[in-house]
Image 1 (cartoon, one colour):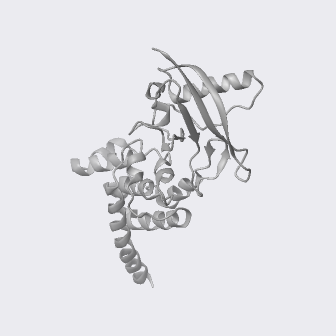
Image 2 (cartoon, rainbow, N blue to C red):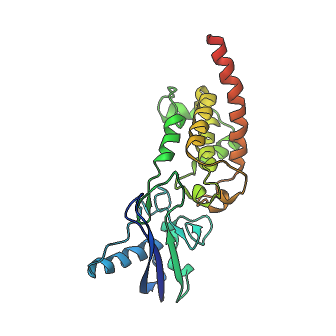
Image 3 (tube, helix red, strand yellow):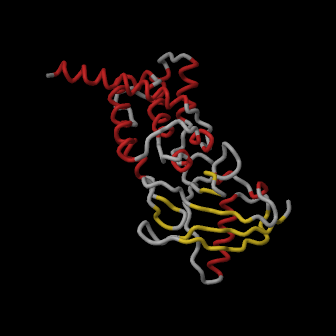
Length: 257
């Protein structure tokens, strides 16, 4: 274990309509075994002791599964280590004397609450549109008796790994949410329990996404930034499902006329 001295260049902003600016904050004596969030905790303790405002940032589980530790670090979503959430990024990835630039997600759909914290309620709107199953499936033992091919189960689990952090949106030049939406659509649509609402789900979720976020033009930055390395193949799958839904849902409506 060793100590490093770094300088933080942190975005400070009082609210969504306030003007923001960068603050330069020295951070000496940082142990390299600290996580990035532990480093921010220490910096905040020092700021408070000096009578200054602490840096506001979002966090919860600190185990890489909740998605709230959403920071842009040196221009990269979640920082320089691929497939890693900010809370699992350690200071040994940085060198003594480094200046580290820390910003919030930059997307119109994610307004800044304060400093590094953003409001990701736009993701909730997408989930509310169809990210659920209403079919009665019984308890876990009942659901487990339904045979599911391993390839399908594996694909569904890969999609379900999405933690909804928003790194895909922050990294995308268009601030698109296709990777998030496709993961949430696919992990339900691939499984038998999700079939009853399959086409209604994908149409509702994609239409809601398009109202709130930019459009995908296949840059692939979302996959590179994703802390769970979710594949953009799910976007292709969602696009195919969406086209089918437009036919299936229109046919269903015409049958009820």
